[in-house]
Image (cartoon, rainbow, N blue to C red; front, side):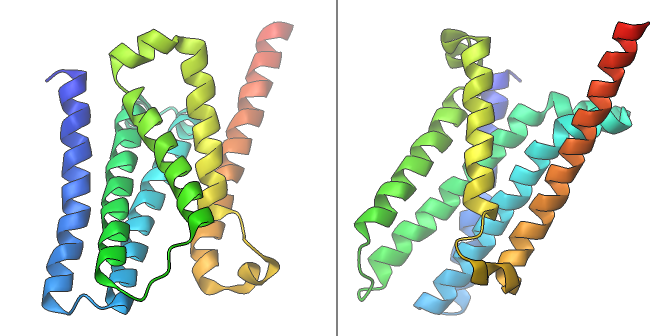
Length: 201
């Protein structure tokens, strides 16, 4: 199976599983706003878990150097594609909510920010294919994907206000991200020590 086929297969499997499970659940209950919000939270949580895996792939390999961490790192781009699939399902549920709940008002600022975030998601997705990645070059690719990860860390985990710091729903996102960032810091420090030791040898 080619890398492009693997990317598309992963993308559609994750998107269809997330959106399909939400649709199945809503058909059993009822597509009222509260139930749609539950599916939105669940799809966001799935995307968040996948994002954490992307963030952990390299530092885990640096710290542990196990066969499974090496395999995870080799497949990190594919995990990023899965993130795009999960976020696509999330987008489909957002559209479904606005089409279903008539009393919802349209927030132009929120829509613009959301559209910008999804434009970035699909830019990262497209450059996960070998052809577009070669077009922009390895340096631009690295900058784009590192910047994209940073932006999504902020989107998912940064508190919107001080009240969020005591909100249990926020802590579900904030604490795991803090742990992941500490692991990345530990890996960076260990890598720096290795470089110093090599320089001194």
